[in-house]
Image 1 (tube, helix red, strand yellow):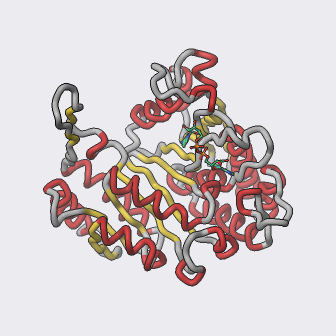
Image 2 (cartoon, helix red, strand yellow):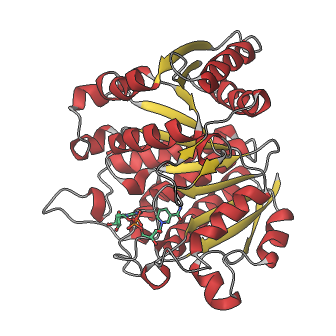
Length: 353
Ligand code: NAD
């Protein structure tokens, strides 16, 4: 197949890790007979420096003409001023909004080779392979609010409509069909009206997916179960705030921030794929970055935007094999052992493709 991919390296290690993700995608293309073309565009701090805005219109034009977007990271010391009118992260928010990306997918897998880096006992990590589907554009982060001002109160509103819950639930059930066919829907239906609507809606959408098992989990229980029985989860679907908190809790099970990929999806095939980590200015430009999160994000792109499941699995398996063979970047290398550079490590993955 032919596919056009927009690459937004962004800032710091974003540049280093996207370079390796592109190399893997090129290797996949030549192995499986596809034709992927890549076009780079600006976002984040570098876009501010060159154009005065974090998401120049040319970037949108390039992305609109492509099948998927691969992003590195945005931000860095130079632009770290929360009160500046133009900030790198505005680029990220704006591009998600422009493409209507309402679901954020974050897989968390515990690799046996990295078990000693996770805060749980190795036997609890065995088989941990879950996928968070977080609603990204609604809920309390976007609901009506009242700042304190002269008052002695302030409030935020958790608001969800049926269509908002339906569309993210469909994404979760469809993702589960390609996995272990289980969905855990996270809510607080015992207390919140918005979460009773969430539960009722997810239950109704489930009627369309009789091959997938559904369980409802209260958010507080879920926080505990993620540590006591993490391997029992397959797909978890949650509201914006609950998904934000729980996916960060679960992420530590992977052993390093550098291991984690993500996808942001909407109602078309177009998606935005990026590692979970930031621009890591403390190690940028030194060849120390772990490119796994970016490479696994490229695998998610193959799966969700390009419909190339076998190719996505091949990349994921290559990562597993490289790790099992002892390939490590600095963040995951045991003390006293040699860490590979970003390029050397990616080459190990490539060798296993
Ligand atoms: P960070 O994720 O950049 O780094 C946190 C720590 O993890 C650092 O010590 C870093 O060296 C390490 N780390 C991160 N990714 C790594 C990798 N792939 N390999 C090895 N080590 C890795 O978070 P931060 O330090 O809080 O933020 C730095 C900048 O990134 C800030 O400007 C922040 O606003 C931005 N940021 C951007 C995004 C994004 O683009 N999506 C996300 C988070 C933070």
